[in-house]
Amino acid sequence: MGQLKKSILNSLIYWGGNLLTSRNKISHFWSPQKMIKKTAHDVKVKAYKLNKESRIVGKPRVLPVKNAEDEEVFASVQIIPIGTAKSYCFLCFFAPVYERVKYISDDDMVDLVNTHLEKCEKTETFRQNSPLTTEIVSVVKSFLEEEVVLITKFLLDNYMLAEAWQVGKFLLLKQKRGNLQKLYEMVVKKFDDPKTVYANLVCLRIIFPLLSSQSEEVMQKVVEFTKEFYAELETSSKVSHSKGST
Image (tube, rainbow, N blue to C red; front, top):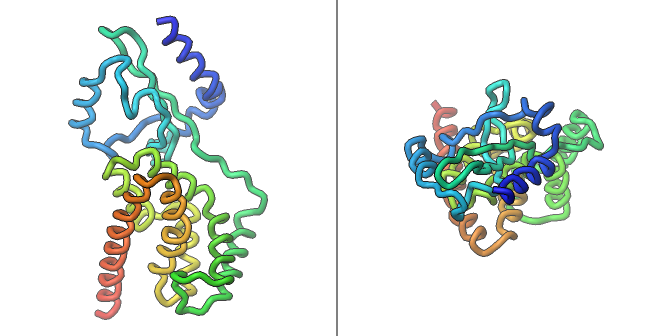
């Protein structure tokens, strides 16, 4: 029990007092339904044995949570068991995954991205490398720094779960947030095929290479995900085109 108390104390020090008090409003409720059905979640909780190896308990992982405004955000979640083998409960800590350090204002960054995109032809898709496309990818990567960190960290922490990849696809294609949405709006105004341009810029040129560089196992998951991702993108594009023609 002494070692357990020491472990908890170390965790409190590591996460910092400000994360447990003033920043507690950032995230306060894990949303397991995004990753696993509640019934399956409850079964796993009941089956857990203290000191037994676990892929979740005791290990910080990036997971979807709800903040004080009931908005879904990503946070680093660490779950620690407290008690004895016969009687224990779980203590859960939340912390921000990433905090942007702004060297340039949001408006100036948007202008910078727009200026670079204006150099392209309307038919550009960012499938091929060129000095211009490489430069634009670099600028877009800086613009999307926070979103890229959150999504890649989430997928890497949970890459063995099929549900995690579905959540990733949903965030990238359907529920674009923050600068992802701003980028998509810029791309729509400039290019003939905005959905493909957006997908190639964000996923093919930035997120997928970052994930694939981690390990062979992750790279295989990325290959499978890429096929599903572009198949769904193609279906979505056909539906949009069909609606536009009627």
